[in-house]
Length: 353
Image (cartoon, rainbow, N blue to C red; front, side, top):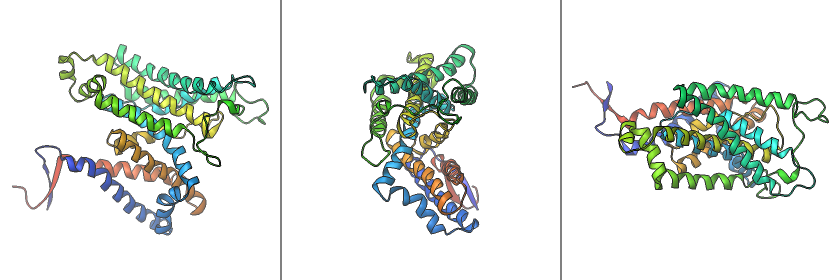
């Protein structure tokens, strides 16, 4: 019979091998899912794993999806390593987009390209301000950050809806709930003609390098991680848990807000009720599949982006619902949780001694 035996120390090999095994199991279950739905599994896997990378244009679309996922995941990694559970990055993403959109709407024909920096800065500050609500309630009233940050997502959705259905609604937009299209001067530059890929992907990669330096090469990053792993030891060393709370949530909120700003000042080009795309929740999977390490999160952001694009293509080419991408995300997360058991346990065959 099979039994689990506790390892004397966590397995370093399985720490990094677990996500790979989880991906392989997800692919296997995906094949079973396609067969159960009466679809060609080879064609299904091709849509999810080949179509998103087969051309320059496809890679550009992949970067459009990967950029917000990576940025949000980097901020979440700082929180999670600090043992602070920010589940509301989607709300911070939305408010960052709203703040950036508000600045973009101020542009006119005399505005210079400098406004792009103002738009992105507004997004960062908007996300930080929204995360600060969670930090304040946790700091002053010991409110659980999981529940507070999650509930604030729904408030952010209502704020966005109020603006696009109300004061910011485009009067020439045939009554559609959206702002006017942002002026070209406010949009982030594209990397190449004929592609939606923007410099946002370069900003995200630069942020990954900064996150690595902060977490593993600075005293502040060390303090955040010690506070997460051993709060008592952190207090003994003189590290402030209050400072760690505010630092983690402000960094996470700022990263999510920047992702929102790049989204509306990039591929979308205006505010609509469809700005919330679930990136804030999918980035949680990105963070954990990437093992809360910047390099790992770059790879996992690419993987989750392939799931997003594959879901859209499966809708048009296989007649499947777009939610198939969510099914793959869920399968990957559950497989990762299952495979992570191997980090602390080994499987033995035979009777218990």
